[in-house]
Image (cartoon, rainbow over all chains, first blue to last red; front, side):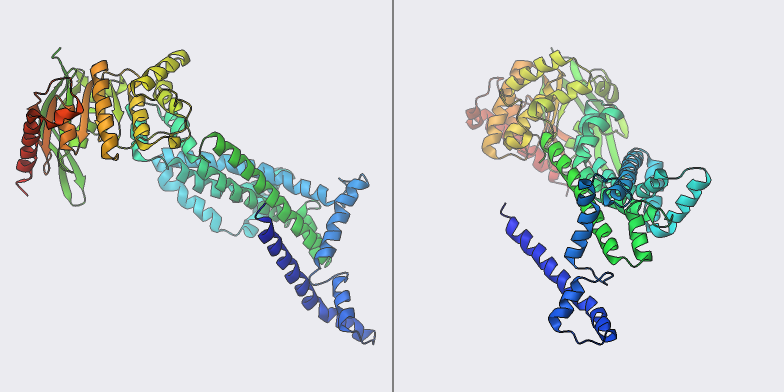
Length: 290
Length: 259
């Protein structure tokens, strides 16, 4: 608990900056309103107004907090946690695509890395494509994926998951290739002196050696997956999901709604990465490596 | 008891590098008999490790022939004829000491009950009883190297090949492990090939000392030790020991004369 002081200090600093930013950015609208109403407002009246505008340029933290509570906790209290107005419902839509995409991306990433490590042809040919795939802006390719998959009759969850997979397999490939190659020559030779098969070499030496490399990759992949799922909701005019909330918010200038969706997405990503962190700790501890 | 276990005839190995060919071994002839303790000594680059790796089929000779137990080195490796101890212990950090020793046995598909029995046996041989469930990082460097020897002994191979196993350890630990290794050799009657940089170590341990020289890697002298099989540490002060050490040093110096 020694860290609690510095953490609280940083959080407090963020809130101070946020409030200051809200006042600075929303002040002109407050003065405009006063001018049109032909009234003079004092500084403190102006500050009060910037904290409570309906469509502020930058909503104040408490406005976002209130909106999040209204669309999560309050809905639960009312027993409508999964109504279309609830952020829990929208988070779940995005989360399900994220998790499916993450699982697919991890599977694809691990298989590609095994191929790259064990097959010379794949080693020479696959990696450049893997890297090239990540240089294409996801915003450009996401609509294509959705259109193509829709043309062959696939819609809903899967296209979004495919976009998540597209983003999340990359860190897994890079991490796992490095991890599977981490045993030194001596350890590989040692396996040879026992005339171990390729399979035994993989399961008993290469895979366990790669664990410290796998988990950091999974953390990056999970965050990328969430971004992928949200991006996948943008070009489709999706009606549900955090991406859809962002899109609807920006159509109608509902900045508070946008910010509450953003904060929820960030919290979701943090929670997912934290879960992987816990699994990492447990696994490495059991392997005697933590 | 004098049958040949390892036999090399006209063995040569050339590495092709960007700076031209490197003759790691050139026309090497050697017979190792059952129960011998053979040390290979020489400066870096004399091919002693390469020679040992040829016996283990970890390196392919470019000319000549090498047989282990009367068959090719590759067949001997596949029939698990030898245990190999590397310069570093190379224990898997995610396995306990017992788990590490069990590793080759798992690879070879030996039953769980027999694995347990072997683990206990070899732990006793290297005096590591009670450390079965410790992780490698919980042991000192010397103990880790002993565990790695135990692992090489676990599957009952008759030949033990050791590549500078004590090179990274300090002198006191080294003396202690040398004594234990001799004791182990006496009890198990294995054939041991041992690569080293140290003259006292080679003379103290071996029944046969192979002196090698570099560029190209070749054997300059083979010394049959006249020391008795029973060797207390203070045998190193005896005139006989000093005489053999002297001959080894002469051999090393002669090999260095040409550069």
